[in-house]
Image 1 (spheres, one colour):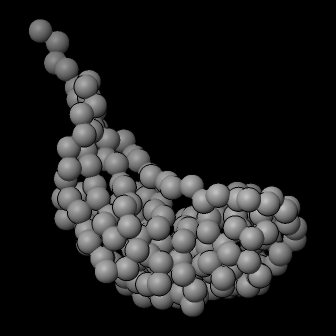
Image 2 (tube, rainbow, N blue to C red; image 1 turned 90 degrees about the vertical axis):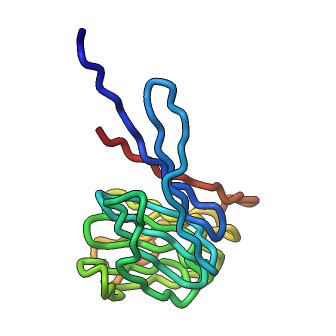
Length: 180
């Protein structure tokens, strides 16, 4: 009789003050709670890279978790941004934070226990999400649509364009990764 392999996925889900981890199991893909981490602030966005989860935590800024054991997420470090952290994107050792009325914050997380500010681009408006691609950060702004920021030099990012989209609506996001 052939041996069947099972595939598991870990789902990281943010619901306000709770950061929850679930495991799904093939073939039925049932959802089982594994762990939850509760905070007094407000988790807003997450990006998982390898064994780390980077969380935009509202008024608390950036929180970095070790999720190598999904049953016990551990806080590795924090960085208090000046605004209200609503979105995160991770590229290498840099985390890009959409920081509401403080625009874009760029943070070096080479040492997750002691993250340091690298650069920032303050813009008028209400930044709530960020995507990084090809040396550019695309910042979703509730008041002004899409902002394009050149991040080729992270210490001195610069606004290079914008596209006004009236009536932008923020979207919720989850991040999943598969394990075997």
